Image (tube, rainbow, N blue to C red; front, side, top):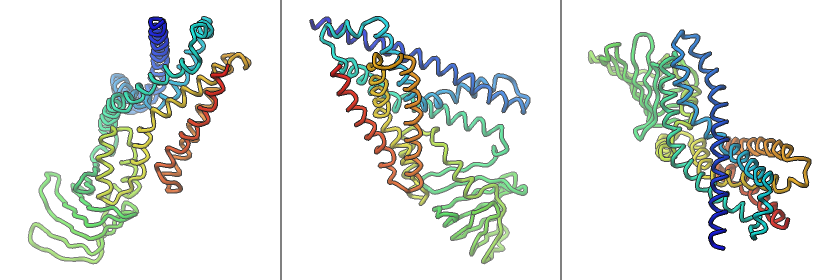
Length: 362
């Protein structure tokens, strides 16, 4: 009897992983085709080799796949049960005392392990490729010479304007203002010409207003000025956009950036949201397993298996937008970030669990 249990465990796991690999391959192919068309359009305007669209598509592909893994898991589950029905293996397993929930437990365990692999393995890999994608692609845009980074020493900006190179450091961001700012101005040969120090700089638009500035020239002519107008390629909106693409950071880098943002006074809501979304991924995948199982194990009460697959796809889209809506509420401070991520998943998990109890009775 133990051999029978071991055999069906191995069989179900292999069958589930087989369909998972097939669905991943299909979605990877579709994503590649759709993405390469966008890259060809981008690089066609630059008259560059077809090599570049292929390279950048491959760099961007894993991060796109990562975002749709819940959908992939749902389709995999439905095809998995469709196979069991087509081969009448559901009834065969029942004859050996294998309940519906036993099957779900096996694929749920596999999915949870897969979820942790996605967080700490695949996402680390995909975020690294995404970082390279963004870095390399910036070299083909007008923003290539403009850089901005946040670390433990504050915000750092490299800007070029009117034949000058500016290195800007601010210890804090407060709404539309940079605070405790140092601006080092250099010529094209990176020879220092002037340093400006100010307590506050208004960066609401690209015409900065430096308030109560102290100016130090290399020739020794130093002075103070209440207000200096300063042209830049950056404003608060552009700075926010530069740090909004968190898919290029793995979970450990997100944690590090969270501490840096806090020390700078920069909003950490988006990073908190991203970290919690990563941590809840196994639960999200588990919900997709439950929904797919409930739909397919009720197949004889529905019009057809295809009908159930379509319903599953529609439900996954609805769930995506529910999560997206709650996520926005967290980022916009309508709800605590943790609640905005965990609450909809917990509700969906409880609803799915109730459905599973009824499934086991059939």
